[in-house]
Amino acid sequence: MTYSGEHRCGRGTDLSYALGRDSFGELERELWAIVALTVVISVVLHRVMAIPAIGYLDRRREGAELDGRS
Image (cartoon, rainbow, N blue to C red; front, side, top):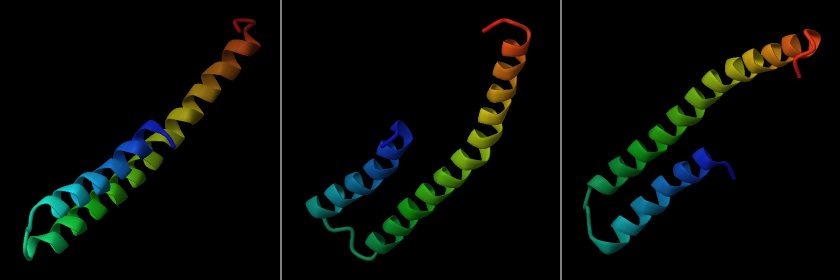
């Protein structure tokens, strides 16, 4: 699992721990919805940002190899 993946899972485990320690009443469902939405947004943003960044780094590396700078 990646660094960011561990943090995404950590949100759920932290919330589970907190809900097990105390009662949040009707807020529990809303809290789970917020955590789920945060994880989805995090995954989407990671994909949107990582793919172009990797492409840029690959092009830079290929250019450096063509110039003889490996």
